Amino acid sequence: MVATSELTELRIFSNLPERELDAIAGFVRRTAVAAGTMLISAQVPGDAVYFVVEGSVKLQLVRESGVELTLALLGPGDIVGEVGLMTGKPTASHAITREQTTLLWMERREFLKALELSPTFARNLATELSLRLLTSYERFQALATLDVTGRVARQILELAERYGKPVPGEGIHIVFAVTQGEIAELIAATRERVNQIMVRLKRAGVFSVDEHSRILVHRADVLDELCRL
Image (cartoon, rainbow, N blue to C red; front, side):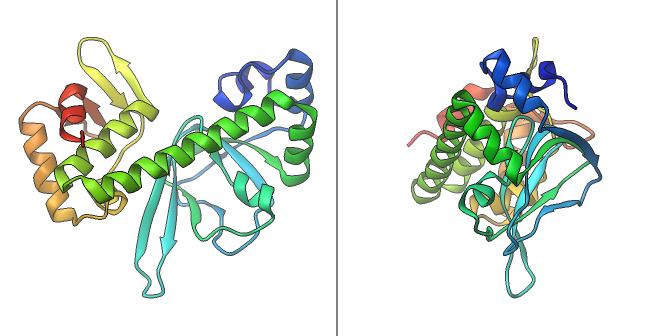
């Protein structure tokens, strides 16, 4: 059984009345899985929902040609698999861990029961889904209106806002590694073009990359200026 204090560290469980939180805690389990673990397979109905505590997950589409395409990166605080459980339909993409990842999870029956038991939990889920929809809309808008430099800037800024931790005197550190190839796939650009832009921005001191390929944003204001319409 997972402690309620751990649940409240995740957005989806925030502000729940103690009685509701205690009830839901009995449904939740913890697991740690290796990089490359398939949490959800495309076209296969899911039977569990996952909450990322540490680590990261990618949503990946595999084309008929065998080419793999990253659709989204998910990190601490995010939910994986909720749409399939609520609709009863399989998704079009795989959900795969990118690194050693710690997860909390619930089976489908218990997840649906938790939504019935806790109106606050249901509202939090609706908020998370709305924010994800807004992020998707903003990404489509960026694809339609920004040049590649603007799209790179916007993607780094989005990751920093969602998964960044402030480093006093330095900037915002994105908590998991992101490759140039993944950024290229997310913004529909070539890896070569993304590499050119990122090298230029690093030389300008806008951000740096540590030995673990984690980005530290020093000048979020410059990124914001580059991705304005």
